[in-house]
Image (cartoon, rainbow, N blue to C red; front, side, top):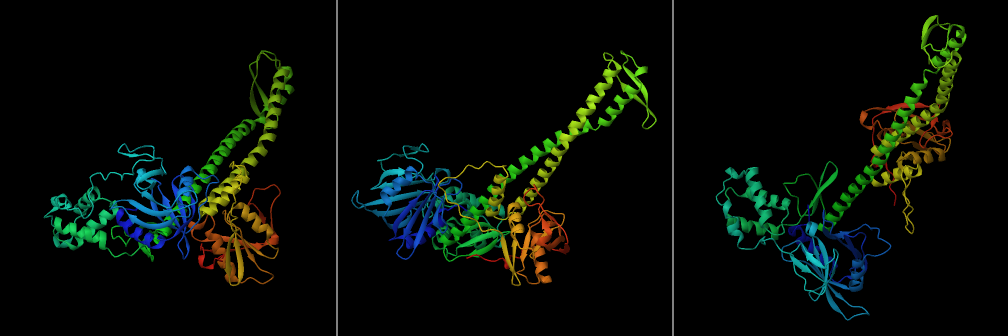
Length: 578
């Protein structure tokens, strides 16, 4: 749900209590639409986050760091000039609209102490962050030397003017009595309201009341009709004000099928879903947007590598099709050779000018009809067939290795596609992307002057005291398998692409329970995950080898046993890193 005025009112109360008196230590602008203030509150260092992304503008507190560009944008430099070392005097909601006001007392060696105000306008595609001093515009995130939406001037040095309200009324405006009078007398039998009636009222709230999002309007209409059998405009306006200003806060995140769905001041009945409660709204929003960002990042990365692999598969299949066509043409090579031999053995019966002949094939005793070029002599026709035969032989010799290589490449790409399907986090997809970069399928420009955090290798589990590691892509599978000791136990899904698993034995005997649990993990991270029971093979690592020149992740094994298990992620057995 977007941050409407109903939600922002509670959030501003929290931000005001937390940041008032705090000192601005750092200001960064990770993207053109984001600004982060690092504030020392006297008790702890907290990050105040502002985003004017049109799809989801918001303000709140974040816990995770964001990577910043090496060169700060102009607006960031403006904020640093005026607000670094400033003290936060307060955070408040402007009227009952989606505008947050942050007041500062700023002082530096360059100018005298003065009051600065930052207006954060969270209004969809018109969202903006505007810095003012004594009511005059100093600058804005979206640029200010233009007429915003053709309605109000935003010009440096001119007075700051609030955005137009589009004739919407605040919840305490008395004109709402007449606005909602059209619903007076509407009857809901025994308090059970129809969806149509509730939809009409929620649409009227959304269109006529300032700062109310569509979901909040639906919740207000739903809650009113639950407790009222007949509509009264006067009762409803009182109910509306009680809802907006007196609702007891119970911050929560709503989830559905394991994914976050929405974040609310309290659990909205119209939204449904499982409820995860939080101590404060800012904490709930931080959790919600972090999860949403992770899902968005994961999906965007997954789509990119999927597109790369799909494109590569299409190219290989096209190449295979051309190779197969050439091989098919060359399959008649032996026939051309026999035709040349038959012409030479019967050359005394043929003459120049013949267009065809029928000769006895002494290999199988059948009659063979042979086409001839009338312009050539019998010897030249025989030479022509021998030439075709030799060309076909060269084609077969050249194309077959190319076909074998293309088939191996296709197998590898299909294995990578399986890895993408099994990936569960953005980190997993990043590892696959690195593998594709190493394979030359993605051209990745070198990122100079950027520090990249090294990801933790492998999925690691502890099962009955044994450490079990699982590779997350082909490269990790190779590293894991061939860095293991000869006595360690290696596991892999039979007839499916899967993660390689290693049970580190340290010279101890591995129990059946450990083998079963590791096999269940292996089955979960295999292409057969959704196919029910999966056969898993296991052997000592010393019986696993990698053929010379084979693609990452490919190996052969001997002296193995197998076990059939149901896939299970065994998340409770994952070894947590500190």
